[in-house]
Amino acid sequence: MLIQAPFMIGILDDPNTSGRELHLDFTDEFRALPREQQPKVLEQYLGQLQQEILRVPEDSADRQGMLMIQQVAEQLLPHIAAGEVSMQESIVIELQQGSPLGRFFAE
Image (cartoon, rainbow, N blue to C red):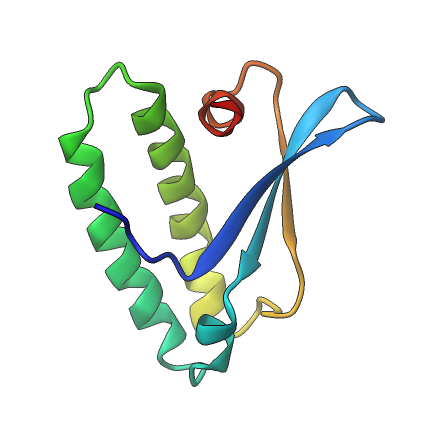
């Protein structure tokens, strides 16, 4: 099942550190929502993601990547609810070497 996320995710190689970066950009649809609806949409996404995570084997790289996306979204939720996150900017997260998320997107 494909879950429609309120953001797009990209992984870029960082030539300065030989590491990788996770880039998160909110979709146009999410940006267009009234601010008070954005946390509700993100909460719905988290619920769907949790259901999908439970369907994936525990030792799967896919599951590890999904869990990391869940963690990022959960950390963003209170900041989005408070209106502290610019919907127009990319959120960049530096990934440690060997990160399951980096392997998840490399496949």
